[in-house]
Image 1 (spheres, one colour):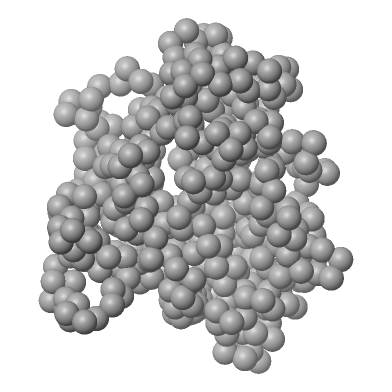
Image 2 (image 1 turned 60 degrees about the vertical axis):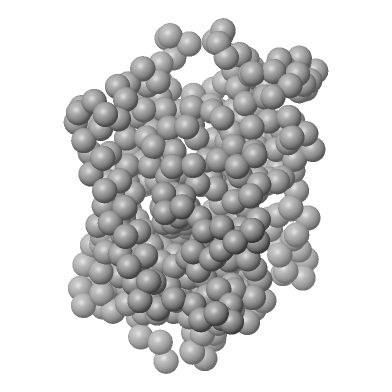
Length: 442
C-alpha cells in the first residue's frame, strides 16, 4: 500500500483496474484499522447495498469529509437521522413534480444556445457550460430560485469545495478546517459562497410564504413547513439540505452531460441517430415531459454514459455486524469500498464493457431495457434503501437536455481526449474544450 500511494493519488481509476485484474472480486487491503475491502462483483455489491443493507452504514471518511461542506444532509447522514430526512423530502421528487423539469430545461437550454450563438464557432468549455446549466435547472426545480446570475460563482464554489474535500479524504491526517492552511481557506470561502446562496433563497421565500391551505410548491417549502408534530426544522438543518442538493443535484447531472458530449463527438453515428430522434420533437416546440417516451435512444445514450462514467465512482460503507462476502468473513467495523467503475465493467454482466454501445440498453423493439437498468450490474445512483432520491429527476433532466441541444449544435473536439479525473464525481481533466457551431432549426 505504501508503494501504491503515489499511484492512488495520481490515477486512482487505473489503481482500481489493477487491483481487480490482480486479485479479483474482493480485495482486502493491508490496512489493519479498519479492515478495508474493495468490491467489484455485482452480486456482492448488491448484498452490501440492497439485500443486507441494514448491516452497513455511511459513517466513513468519504461521507464524513463531504459533510464539511454539506453538513449532515440527506447524502451524508447515517441511518437513523437519514430515515426522517428521506420521509420529509420524498414528496419533492414525486412523479407529478417531474413534469415541471422540462420547462426549466428548455429555458436554460435556450439561454445556453443563445450564448453559444453569440460566439458561434468559438471554442467553449462544454464542461463548464453543463455545470452552469445544471445549476440553473436544480435551482428552479427544487428551490424556485433563478440561479442564472450566480451559476458561475456557485459552480466554482462547488468545484473548489469538492476539490479540497477529495484531498482531505485521501489525506486523513490533514489539518482540521479551523487551521488556516491554503486548502482550508479555499474551502471556507467556497462554503461561504454556498451559504450566501442559501440565505438569498430563504430571504426570497420569506417574501412569498405559503398560504395556510396551499400545498408545498417545491423542496424549499417542504423544508420550511412544520412536521406532523408541529415542529419547524432548525435553520442549520435547512441549510444542510439545500447545500446538499445544490452540490449533489447539479454535479452528477453535469458530469453525465459532459461525458455524453465527449462520447457523442467520438461516435458521430450515435449523435446522428440521437439527432434524428430528437429533431422532430424540437421542431414541434419540445421537448416536453410527455416526449420522454419518444426518446428511447437518447435515454439509452445517458444510460450508457452513466455506465462508463458513473457519477459515484466509489460507494463506501461501514459494516455494523459480521458478514460473509464472496466466501470471505468480514468483521463488524470493516470499511467496504464498492466501485461502480468496476461493477459497470464486470465481464459477467457486460459484453465489450469498455466500449460505448448505447444499444445495449435497448430491446429488439428499440425501447429501454428495464431489466438491464434495474439489474445488479448497474448502480450509477447506488441501490437499495440509499438509492439516490434524485435519480429520476437527474435522468429526466439529462435526457431532455440532450434532446434540446443535440439537434441544434455541432461540436468538434479541441486537443486530445481528456483524461478522466475522479474527484467526488468523474470530471474531464482540464475541462472539455469544444468548437461549437449552432445550427438553425427549421
